[in-house]
Length: 541
Image (cartoon, rainbow, N blue to C red; front, side, top):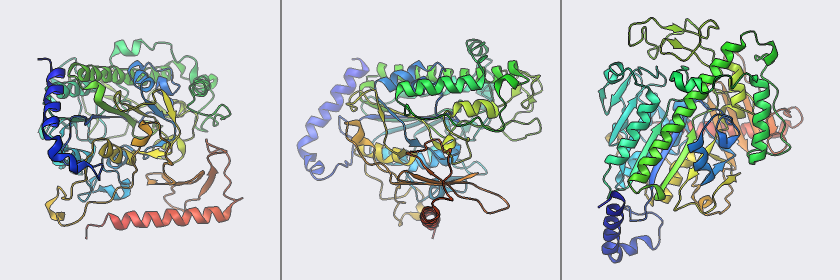
């Protein structure tokens, strides 16, 4: 019997047999103890360091046909926020708690419940492929320690795409798998392992699959054939690219027809004045190739869902952990993610040096200020900052059996902390009353800060978050209604709050802090109170 038929018959037989016995459990609550036949599978996909406008369905020229199809058959969120860096976003997404409380010693706080722990208790098979980045320092906390049945991927935050450091299967280091395979490419390996996990899962049980790509995080590494497909594509330069993307975004309804493009970042010259245009084009060509290879892999995961009969009743959520990254990779930068030599013994040539074309294994570069500014069209600043360019990110929701309003752009103000509450609602999963860490077994799990977005799937309008809090790296911010208080964190002097009305000024061009001192004081007090609350909540005693 085909997997799809077997899964349907077996689940529905169990459901029909037990319906009468368990019906009373569902009368007064939306939360179930075990999944029923209609429980959706869950696939959460997160990309790394990508700008708001990179995807085709958000206005970009990068080829992303599989994500574009998911968007056309699902929902695109236009006012969705991440945190401003990789690991803090992952902690917030997996726990539903702002990272200031959910992060503990570079890992997930022991009093937080992860998505995998909650779904595992509810009978789900829990799998992960990709970048963990929550292992602590030194690396000691693995995904299989926080609710996942199976893990393939790397523990750290960045590595060579051809020979990734800290590559593991569960808790076993398997770096030699990449070193011994001349065709190895991490993005493809993540996609293939994720597809295998779907195919090998028990057809009678629901699956939670977490796919965490490193694309398009530096280094700029991609197969040559995929880079070649973008040859000459970026000869237009970043100025024309930003204007063209904004025009498409308006046509797609991602932004308002009246929105103005933010000025080019002051560290970025006009394209016509750029001295190394050929090298600059190559940087963006490699970046685009990284994204397209990821998209192609997502297509293979979708194929696996279809082959196993899971596709129609799978909620797929595509997210990005922060905005495009401006960081210029210098030749003297070091780290355990940078190997000394390639797999064939060549010396590495790190650094954004115009005489070295990025892409091959022996290079280690990033795409820098100019292209990151374009990736984050139409917004200002980058990863590490809490201006919109660092934290406004795409979110796609696709679920054939569960989303009734397809192809819609959703304006609801939402955040990565909303992913876990949403998943809990659609899977009818209760938060575990016991924590995985036995030291805190008698303490209640940390309360989530997120809200469920599930009503939106049925066309309902919800208010979203009246207030969102941000504080990490170079940024600090509070979105409160249409107002946004934001600052660039200073290391040696007090930070200065800026104030914007996002309804009137969505790209933060007009700082009105001097005109509304009372509003600045009001919002700063809310930010201070929220910061103190989260600090108190994260205490272990």
